[in-house]
Image 1 (tube, rainbow, N blue to C red):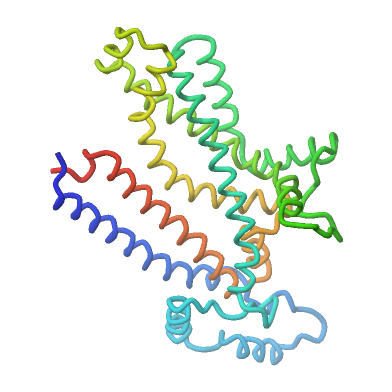
Image 2 (cartoon, rainbow, N blue to C red; image 1 turned 60 degrees about the vertical axis):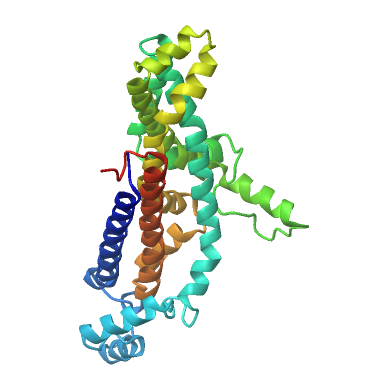
Length: 328
């Protein structure tokens, strides 16, 4: 049985891991744009762009200062929430650009996670309950198929089929040009309509993952004695499955949610790029193309911090739900 002290030690250890990862994030975030080929002046290279003009631009951006001074300034600004001004959209603040795009990415990720869990958990539970039967084989093969498809390829396929061959959904964006909304519901309806293909594309991979995870977890639970006792009491299959078997089997799924956020962020960047979805992923993609250091640093920092926080919350939630975690 876990004690208060052991739970506290577990919490301190996890917070320590989070702190180390956060410090690594700060260093890597500073280094990534500076080890990339080129610099913010690359996009301006052309007739009349002299080396003197390039040096003046680097001086304006503060990139001709010693590396340690750049890092110190970056560290102070980042820890105080000041991400600077975008080089490619000068003089727009990076924070302003991110806050404009962040709600759309959060909507895309939230809808994808909800849909993935809502479909994957019941499918995995049903597959485990029908282990070895035709239903289980169909669920397993279908999940394996979607698990093996690259997200960007599926995005292109969905766009070609349902945006071009059968034009049910728009080819990209979050609204039609010149659209005027009469209210919030009108805006949300249009946002959902434009987000269907990105959400379905992003969800397909994770539905398969949660299906496999829930199926494997439940297969470990079903042979337990208390499941057999519940069946001998005359309870229906539905009651045995969802009241007695699924609750303990869903714990690994909760933990996996935190770890999947990282893959979800990576998938969102690719999906947003394919569908021209104006979210954080698309903003990061544009920043990399423009060698926009402050924008790269701001988007990478915010998205990575989201992943680290989600993993920490998942660990702590798992420890709270399972008394064996952190026990002595």
